Picture 1 (cartoon, rainbow, N blue to C red):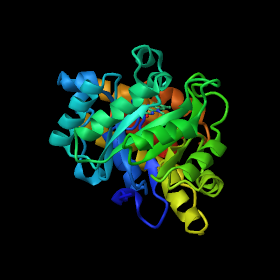
Picture 2: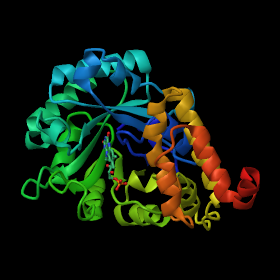
Picture 3: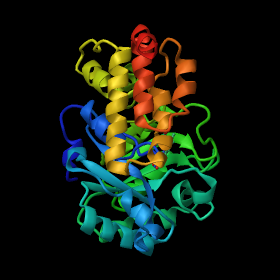
Length: 331
Ligand SMILES: Cc1cc2nc3c(=O)[nH]c(=O)nc-3n(C[C@H](O)[C@H](O)[C@H](O)COP(=O)(O)O)c2cc1C
């Protein structure tokens, strides 16, 4: 089986999970800078791609510094999926195309998209084959352990996806009906890693650098994908890299460092997504995450959730770090 270059490094690659509304270009760039080895786009509708819907195509854009990157698509129609794959290959040339078979959101699964496909494995394999035939790029898959507990069969699902031509397999080891409740079942990641020839990427419930080390030891996965644990904490990638190398984790970021990275992230958002009120409002959640755990975080968050401009956020950070100076300045 031919190796995927971006997964074949001797060290365990760390991957930023595709996350709608979060894993956009600005956050991907911040995480790459902190040590994420691979990133993915948010999931994009194949129907919208084939119809050239501008907003969806914007989601496939990235800058060179984000490579290696995968563009993730979803849909239940093999022809639309193949067309979207061909279009993304031709116009954006990412390192790989990832198919989402994991999304649990009702509006997506109702049309058999995302994890909805898992109720019909013939459809799943048809989609993978159609996408593989439409591109010279590697096609990878990301899925859950099954539709529900009765249909929970991660190894069976994984083997069929591998047979259909998937070049890497990411398992978020929960069923669709679990949504995000309970725990990801890391034993299932281990079972799949033992059964497949293609690389298996472990995903689910990584909150700390220590969790990354535990997942690799527990499952033997080829790479680890981090989702919610990176919210406001891109340092997780830096720390996990150190822990995997057997080094002590670097010192936790200070409040100043947190604010510096939050503002660098915000400036990237303004440059890449437009200097608009919408960008600022959609960014508020990141400010909330970056300030989590800081002294007085509740009050700080309350104020950051109301900012209308990045300059306001900057002033709030400045006042937090230098309260005396800001009072004197106001006097
Ligand atoms: C806000 C949010 C958006 C998500 N969007 C996507 C997506 O677009 N594509 C996808 O495959 N998974 C998506 N996921 C699932 C994550 O990629 C990941 O599988 C899941 O969060 C479990 O990993 P974690 O425990 O490290 O967060 C999303 C998750 C969250 C919380």
